[in-house]
Structure formats: structure tokens, C-alpha cells
Image 1 (cartoon, rainbow, N blue to C red):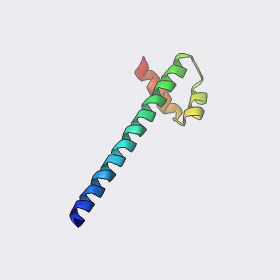
Image 2: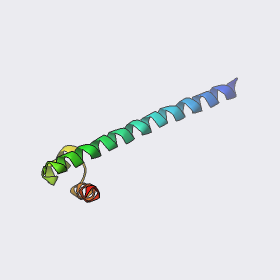
Image 3: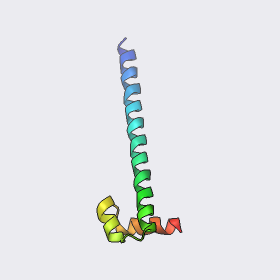
Image 4: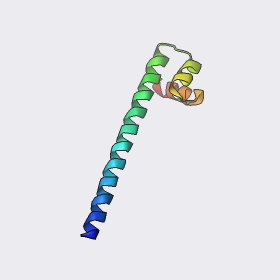
Length: 67
């Protein structure tokens, strides 16, 4: 029974970590979409960086990938 409990705990931990990773990936994708939309509206890169927490360099890279 002890081994079953350990395996069950490991499985639950893996599921929690998977859900967290999925949520973080979704948030990252949403934030990148927002950056691209702001760039399309010609919002200044410095403002986008301040709001999103992305570096200006990362924003410029996203802008180049959108072209």
C-alpha cells in the first residue's frame, strides 16, 4: 500500500505540473498575440515593453517574425 500511495502522489504531482505548464504556455501565447496587435496599431515599443514586461529587443524580434 505504501508504494501505491507514493506512485499516486507522483502521478498527481505530474498532472499539477502539466496543468501549470499548459497554463503558462497559454498565457505566454496570449501575451505575444497582444504584443503583435499593439505593434499593428503602431503603439510605441517602449510602452509595450513597460506593459508586458518583455524587453524592447524581444518585442522587435516578434515584430520581425510578424512581417
